[in-house]
Image (cartoon, rainbow over all chains, first blue to last red; front, side, top):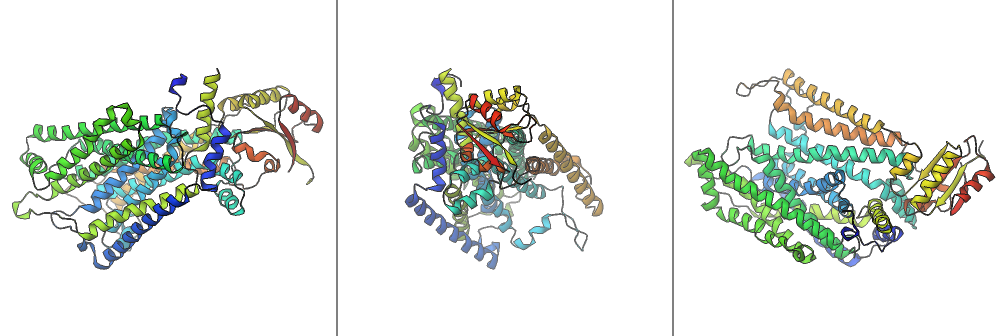
Length: 451
Length: 176
């Protein structure tokens, strides 16, 4: 991307204008009405979540539709789904920073913010699924009086380390990238409250060249470390399944299949947020049609890779010739939950094909609708992977069914509030697009234009 | 001495202007200088001969620390409470690998973050250059060069004159 025809940002705006436009979003919030409407809905969902969790802690996990053999359902299904969504933020920020893809600079901040809260929603699920969540500390090695320690050779124990590491690294990476923008907002703030708020958060950043030099180095190394981390986290989640002996799960395909599906669903959510914020804050000069175009291409690419995973899941079962694997394949495609399998394929891959057309990628609402379809499709896929393997145990006497209860649904819908409330607060109070990186991109493009 | 100023802060309008100014000021023999920009300018850092590779070493140290911690923790737990799971090995590196990987990354990033703040002496909420009247633009779209009074060539009038010749838009003497 060197020629001016491929400029991602319109070059007829000055960096000062961009800075003012973006710092004005927290300081002189433009879309109060829409924000409060969204916040009211989000708070209602969060209340639903709180009520569901109180009910859960009072009466136990029996209020969910879990049974034996379907011991894992909505809790793990939504955990995988939320965590997968989070992955796109890190990939956009870290991977595309290292590859020097400048279009990321308009998207990375809200994508990373999305990651943080998606990981929180994911992380809360295993905790409430424990049934006795106050014993969470048993997962950590502490000198217990009974001399019992955690079992470090179990994927369930790996899980907590992977997710907590992912959350911590995401927070630090996000904050490191945010400090210079907080300093910018501090310097633009006129009201005392804002000055104190941004002044404290900016840690006294002053943009000294030596500081920038260390910052750049640190940020790039963090990015280089975050990329293998993000791949490892969903791989590790897939080991929860693949390390078991169950047909339909016990496959070496699982780690890449999960990571690609994660990126796929995550890019869909990033596209939804990009389209929404672009309209809400009138950011069409910064999140341009070209950004939507690239997002559409990435969505299409990750979708096709996920589709490859679907194909190889079938090949895997057929090639193994294992009767249980073949039975699970049959259960998926024509059993009681076939609607999940075909639903996942339909929602994931059918509307996706429209993205081959440029005009579809560059139009906000069509990209939005396709992304919503992908989000639903990936949700069905995680549901399908969980339940179709579990509901038919090895012994016919153990066969059962799973139907989500009201509390399953209410907890799940509630986590959307748990995601939206902090996300809406974040877009209200911090610069929603990385200001200094956008300025730099713009300046480079203007220099290239002027020769 | 409380009344000794901190330095002269000069404002430049463009990236090229500050890079040129930094080069000339260094050429004139000034060494105790600092520049403030809204975004990283690697060219400016090169001109000012600024290079600090300690963050990379801190990251490496954090990684090694996390690696050893995770390996030691998991091996110790298996040693302190040996759990026989179907005769599987007590000290399998393959099963430990994920915990090791995660803590390696966690501590590398923690060291990097804390190290960044420590090397930059942050948080420090106030700093003398903030007293320059137009310095709030340093985070927006202006570029600032500061020559400190303790530079041996510093002379209030001559240095200001030099900065003005280099195209400074505004010059301010900031108290320390």
